[in-house]
Image (cartoon, rainbow, N blue to C red; front, side, top):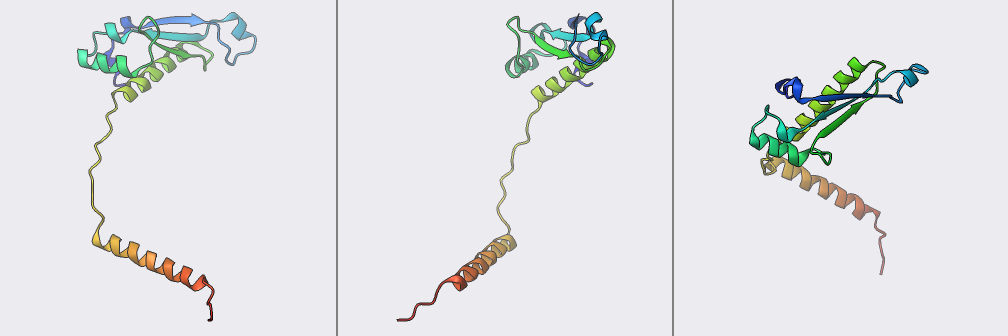
Length: 134
């Protein structure tokens, strides 16, 4: 966890709720769903420029917080870990910068191959034409 490990744990707010996940009757009695709330605008872990990128690229609530929810596992601890992994994926995606494409020209041999295949196709189609006699 590259990005999440930089953020102080005190900036995260975890809330537990009843989940609709697996567990049978246990689901009705235990609060195993976990919601993670984190405000990137108030985070001390990132520079101002990084915070602006996060504010632009992440989907935020009205309060300006990122809300991540997990109810896959039966235990709160596993769901907390899952929330942190989901947040890590969101941050990695937000900070991703695609490589700039370098324009290249086709090689001489690739041009010849292309022209040769076009000529072969042309001859094939010419052979399908009906011959008309005057």
